[in-house]
Image (cartoon, rainbow, N blue to C red; front, top):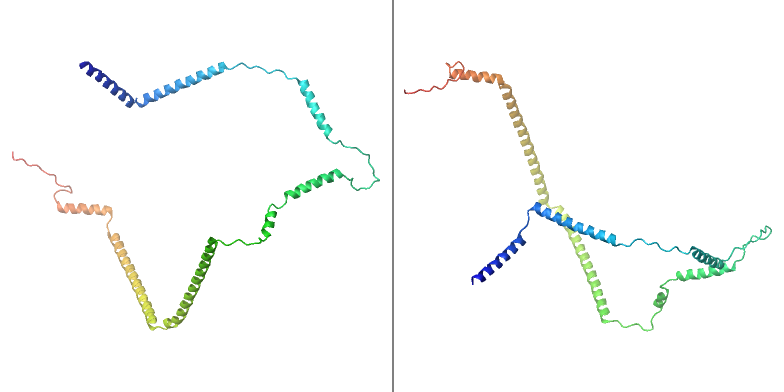
Length: 270
């Protein structure tokens, strides 16, 4: 029983140690050092592998010298075959007394005809056949489907509804214009509107006059206050005179002190 407990304890201790080892981490500088060490080892391994690959490479082996004579002969034969297919230039003597008309070159005319036909064929309208088929009217028109009929009815209703709304708006606008022209002379000739306008103008004038009077009064008060401040500043004594006046007041309060404050005396009951 005791041996079993010891074995379980050792297993538990080992398991906890493994967990703590997984959760543990080195200090930052030590972790950085370990990381650099692993990177250095990996780099050294890569360098060793590269060195081994370079050593395992085969030495350079030059190819055989080609047979230049055979190659030159093949190239010359190719040039001769191409030259034989070309039409050589035929030299003719000058004939100053002959006509200046161009020489007939039938072979060029044939080539030009082929080129023109090919060019016209490329410029042909690709939709020409479709237009021809479209221009031909069918012998029997196809029957209209229910979906087409429903769509036509819907569009017709929408047009009628749009036209009805436009007519309604135009009618309402015409009625509004008639009411406006009818009420305009009545409103303009109303006595209440004229009296109200005159009253508003009178009230506006009174408000403006009150504001103007208040502004003038505030300006006068400011000038009076400014004048009072200037007079007080002008009558105020200088700093030197203030010091002499304070000394005189002190002497008047303490006549036996010769201008100095009396020192405090301590009495004892010995």
